Length: 254
Ligand SMILES: [Zn+2]
Ligand SMILES: [Zn+2]
Ligand SMILES: [Zn+2]
Figure 1 (spheres, helix red, strand yellow):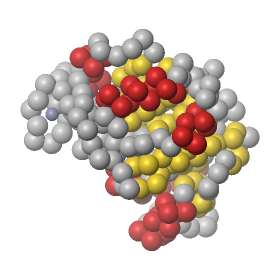
Figure 2 (cartoon, helix red, strand yellow; figure 1 turned 60 degrees about the vertical axis):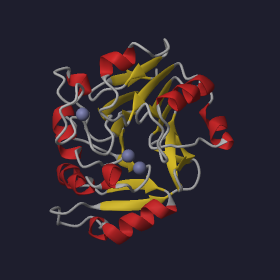
Figure 3 (cartoon, rainbow, N blue to C red; figure 1 turned 180 degrees about the vertical axis):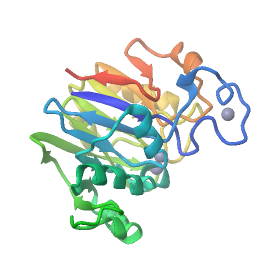
Figure 4 (cartoon, helix red, strand yellow; figure 1 turned 120 degrees about the horizontal axis):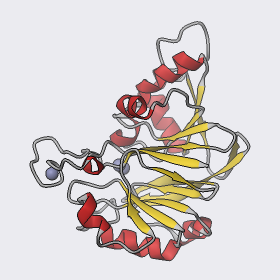
């Protein structure tokens, strides 16, 4: 099983419009962060996208991604969902409806704001042809168990996901005890790490490292970072098994 980080940026992306700080003006491409999304390829070749951020089209072009079998949604903030229309290209190529999975709240939001994307397959492929499925516990997708991981994101209840020995936890301010129990024996953990200073709806660097130490995945990769975290400087201060994620980084859990 493989995971490709399509984007590891926060909602503003890096470089941030109008900013000339060291990270935003860096020539190191690992400081170029599009909005947060990853894609997992199962051993049977099925491709599962996590979230559809506003950079989805460019991310897909960059990664040579031309096939998708399903989308898992973590929550409905703009930086995780507003690229939903770009799924149209995959429906057109595949001539198939793409299933989406998320919490009841996420599915209700998609139905309310992006209802035009929820269509049954016909001869018309100029719009996305998607089917939204609400999940509230582990489910089977293409022979693989997918475990939604309940997380707190400020006042919101959102999902992370565990797929085999990979877990994806973005936009988290607190991981409940019961969810920590679902995160044992991980090979790869992707973990929110917004910035050095505290934030109401996200864990900061110190809290990310605390959780990484608690969860003890074989490797932890920090994601959803703002421009306040510079790749080289941050890498130098991390424990051995914690790494700074970057757009285009591919990790394997086999
Ligand atoms: Zn976000
Ligand atoms: Zn900046
Ligand atoms: Zn969010």
